[in-house]
Every structure is written in C-alpha cells, then in structure tokens.
Length: 316
Image 1 (cartoon, rainbow, N blue to C red):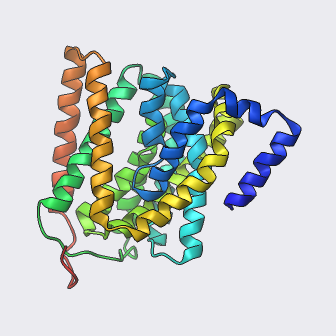
Image 2 (image 1 turned 60 degrees about the horizontal axis):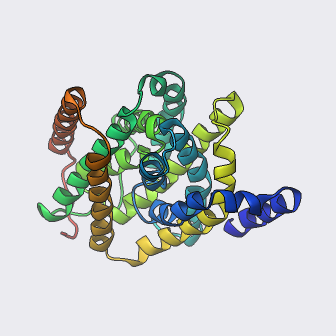
C-alpha cells in the first residue's frame, strides 16, 4: 500500500510540479515525519502533532490544520491499519465496526454544524485540554494501580454496541473540531471500562481514526468545504506518511508499553506547556478550562466505576 501511494505520488510529479510543492511546503513534510510515526505508534493520530505545530508554530488557521489532519490521516493511518491487518496483529474488529457506526455520521455533523461555532482560540485550548486529560489518564492507568489486562471485548449485547456507537459519536465530534480524537476517546473507554491491553487498544484505534479521517476528508472535498490550502500541503506530506505510520505501528508492536506511554506523556506535556506560553489566558478561557477538566474527570470516574468485572488474566 505504501509503495503504491509513493508510485502514485511520483506519477503526479510526472504530470505536475510535485517536487516544487514539496520544496514550498517543506515545514509540513518535516512535521509529518514525526506526526505520521506518532499516528501509527500510539492512540493519537498524526493530527495530534500536526494541529499544535500548525496552529502555534506555523501560524496556520485551526480550520485549515483540522482539514489537513483529516486529509493526511486518511493516508497514513490507513496504511498503518492495513499493515496491522496484513501482519495478523490482534485488534478488535467488532469494536472498530460499532464505533465507526457512530463516528462516521458524527464527524460530518460536526464539520457542518459544530466546528463553525468553535472560534479561535478555543480550538487550540480545546485540543490542549483534551490531550492533557488523556495524559493524566495515562499516568493513572500505568502507575496508579494494578489491573487485569484483557485481549477481547464481547460485543454481542446491544448495550455494548450502543456504548461503542455513543463513543464514536463523541469521538467524531471531537475530530470535527481538531482533526483527531476519535482514537483517544475509544482508547480511554477500552482501558477504563475493559482494562484492555494498550497494544490491542492502540491497534483498534488506528482503524477507527483512519476511517473517520477518510470520511471527514472525503466529505469536505466533495462538499467544497475543504480549505484550498490543504491539498498542496497534503501532497507535500503524502510520501512521508505513507511510510511513517506503518513504521510507527511496527514500533508499537516491538516496544514495551511503558516506553510508548512515557513517550506519549512527554509529547502531551510539551504541547500543554507551549499552550500556556503562547496563548493568553483570560477569565473566560480559565473558566472554560476548569469546567472541561471537571466534567472530564467526572465522566472518566463514572466510566471506571461501571467497568466490567475483570476475568482471570495477567496483572500489570
């Protein structure tokens, strides 16, 4: 798949000035060298790197950064998902399917009716708070207690299916604002409620975010909502992400989960510190932040209290 994408990119070069686009947008390409690797190796999509770098360092508008994140993840994370499937690594196919039932329409609804109401600087603040909650969750998950690790989830009941559909709806709406997040929402549910093995959970989220990105990007492109700046940026990054995400997926499978977690937490802390440094915080933003963190904590605590009873298994 990766080589097919590269071949298509080279064909595009033969017909257009693709290398010229690459030179004009080299900061985008450089950003996605790292971003695509993160997309394949962790439960965060490439947009988790692209969005903060684009909006804070490259001064790109949040809506453009979001559109780019969806566009580029539709390539990189799809390559990562195909590699996972072809290599035979365990992932939760039914969980992915039911989550997508909610996430696919939700990302379209969000792009049309929700995202336009989230005006700057709130997309940046929302992204930082969302990832900060995820970082705190990872710290608690890995160093706060001992758990029984699961490798499967029973999706035969409608209660379980509805749960994943609702998770997909929340994740799709988050992705419509910042270009990623459906993967993180699902990952947190799997670990909070099911004590899922992080590697299995991460692989499942790659499938979800790849599909949500494909839906969001395709809808924006066909409906004329896609920012014209996105396609040249996307063209400059495609040859990088086609290989970066699969390499990240392989890296995740080879590494100890503690190493992957420590890497993610460092990335999240760096992103949050730059937000505090670069974005002026007024009273309304502070109130919004406190409310967001409070509600997030209550929801996560409630989900944890309703977790499934652990089966016999290995402790971690």
